[in-house]
Image (cartoon, rainbow, N blue to C red):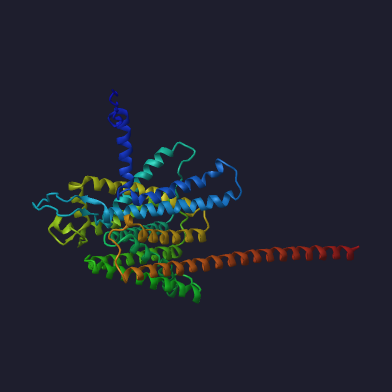
Length: 462
């Protein structure tokens, strides 16, 4: 007679059960729709940090090139993380789950996504960034790494700070506003048109004698215009495809208009930098001096400007229009977790500005411009290919073919434009080096002629 087999249920063992539960929970988090969009940016941050610090662990050839690539990868990770996080907060994050009983007694039939508070959240980010600066300043005050802020010594500098702060804040606020109505892909494809709008702003200011005229190169202007046409084609196809699937196209049109206004503010900010003069400010100076005027500038928009609210927000407020302050106050009451995400975005904004400043000021301007254009293009392509980055499913034929055609055309056009910019800067650098060499040789010839004349005079004297 065989003895019965003894089986042990290892899953019931307390230690194994605890490890399995934690491991399963970790896998659930990684596989959730919330975590998936952040995997690629976090990998970019980790790989970039590793490549930048590789020289401390090993001595390899071309270490400087590896470090430069690492900075670009880190830049991509930081920029894509911030874009995805803000898009998630404004569009896809579940603020209230379905079944929630509203103050008016009604029950939400579907999940309430996002939170359209672009102006209020931007002002909140400025305040939190300023508080983060105060904390960092205090922690480093008695260390060798003490932060030295730039002193404002003239009224012109104060006025410049106020203008820069207001335009910069409006640029970010309008961009955040648009993310509540359009997807990340549409937002980025529109903002890729920044080179052309900046060129037009500079030429417009030059007509009034406020800025030097930029050279009009047919190839560069043609590529910029072509890139903008592809961006417009992409946006129209997205709107028409969304309307065909039953999504509200009017709100998307509003988001596109607001994003274009944000783009114009960004261009004006760059143009004003040339008009008002280079301030030579660090990221800490920017936070310390611009946060206060930026917040003051945004408060009236957040408190008094009523706007149409998307999604199911009209059911929450029993009205089609609401101010940012009304929405923010209600969110703080009914969804404190979402309000905590708003506060966290201020910390992320402060950290992103530090990373961006460090990267931009250690790379050449051409490399930084190339990195920014590459980041936008890569994130748009990822949004189209990865379903967990999409707010809604992609439209069907023929719109999806038009969208892909427009994206590829936009990327090629602005990539060629960046390449021409790099070539022009290389030519200017070679010309400057040649002029410097010519000046050095002419000085040597003058010294030689002077010494020869002196020697001749000496010989004549003898």
